[in-house]
Amino acid sequence: VEAWAANLSIAGMERKLAELEIWIAALDGTAICWGAIRGDRLEGLYTDPEHAGRGVASELLGLLEGVMQKRGVAAVHADASVNAEAFYLRRGYVTAGARTGDGARPITKRLSQK
View 1: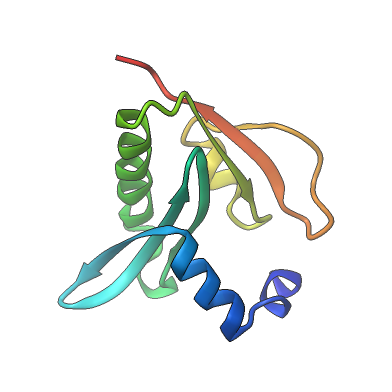
View 2: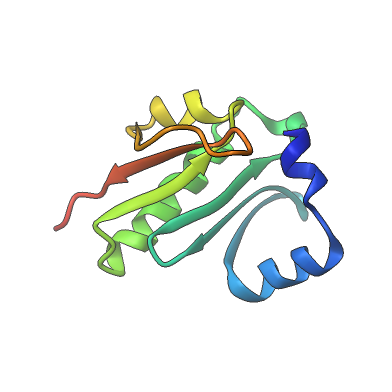
């Protein structure tokens, strides 16, 4: 987490906002969870720690997977942080390689095609 956070910058965040499709879950007008996608990649999913464990991220992940599936994406690919890996594995993702230099684990999930 520290390695990931060390690479954050205003310019980097501005670039992400321009390049990614970002979805927000809000409660009483306050963002409590966000997810970002690009093509067949889940680029990020984060929940405010005060709202963790309530199913918000699971619901948003399901919504994002549905959006991607409707767009013809056959499989979602992502890099899971150490603290999020178990979350994804419980939701049908499988590991897809060795940890990256910053400790993330490549993961993937096949989406059923209807």
